[in-house]
Image (cartoon, rainbow, N blue to C red; front, side, top):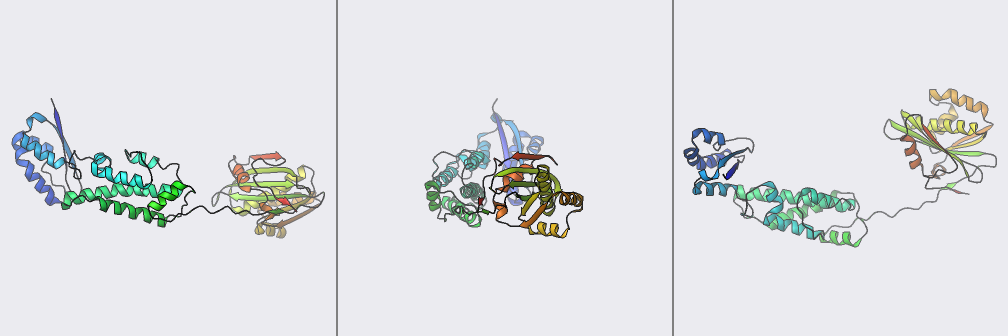
Length: 367
């Protein structure tokens, strides 16, 4: 037995709901009886929300005139060719298909767009700017289709594709204006941005900077140290690099500390570096840091209390030491991979390398 599933979407307006109910109530009531008609909830008058009711009724039980009235209520409001549902309204009807074809053509895309998920995944590998304006265009197209449907249904307007296109274009231009993302440097992106009349925003050219590392005198080992905190406070790590007067790497070291501040991490890096150098037989040291506050704290003795006893033992063992701050010299090595490696370790675990660390991507040029 063929079954018809009736779904009535009541609008927010109570007046429209009453008209809808009064138009269908007598025939359904006479056909199914009062009890069944109440079960169908065809005369409900919701006041605040769109309420959806449904019931399965043998199709043969409905007279043709009632079926035609129900079909008129359920017809797709834009294309007038199918039952209205969200998928058909936004992606399948002839009106929406024209809008999606126009949007895809603006991005030089020829493949069809079957749904929202597929449309969003299409931009997965695009540059940040292209991804943002495409996603904005997809969402704007869906919003414009829904707004147009409401105008047709509630205001008896004629579907206007040009209004939808203007809305989508305005949203794409607005997204480009508010975004700080950059586009890639290729012909496809240039053509797409030209189609939408927005200005390309290419990536800034990389800046090449010469970092000069001043070598120590013979028989003196130079320690370049740094600390980092990933949070405030948060996981912290330290990195230490030791080089001789010829610029050769003696050792590199990184360690994970407990959560703390950047000043604490920098102070730990100084003490840890000196202790490792002493353990390897180096007593003439030159410590270089990019933190002026750390150098000042060691010069004045105002270091964290948990390091004071260790610092005193170090001063008793070393023959000579110089601690100073020099920003450019401490940038002779790319610290970020080293510090991230230390911060990713369990607390108090460390990595020690004899020679140059493989993850060090920059190396200072000795004078």
